[in-house]
Amino acid sequence: MSVSETDRLARVIERDFEFLPDSQAVQIRWRRLLVEYEVKGVQVHDTRLAASMFVHAIPQLLTINVSPASWICEFSTPPMFLIEARIVE
Image (cartoon, rainbow, N blue to C red):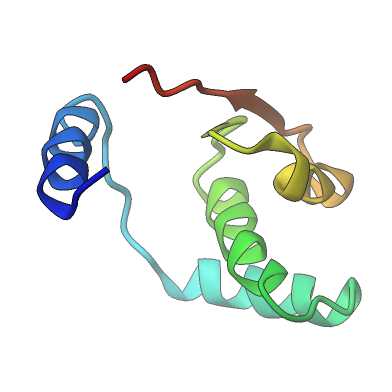
């Protein structure tokens, strides 16, 4: 998929979502999770998403690749659910 095609698809997807602010509460929760679960590497980014979901009380994450993100459900309270999306070209 070209950059322009990806940009067009992202704009279509973004119309249907509300963007929530980052905050000090997200930062505090994220740092706590990193230390408590000894998170390293690319999972640091996923942990930031989980922290934001916790702070904003978002119970579901839409992803195109459930397997790498499934570990974040382990420390989710309240329970977090992953929903797999399929991109149809």
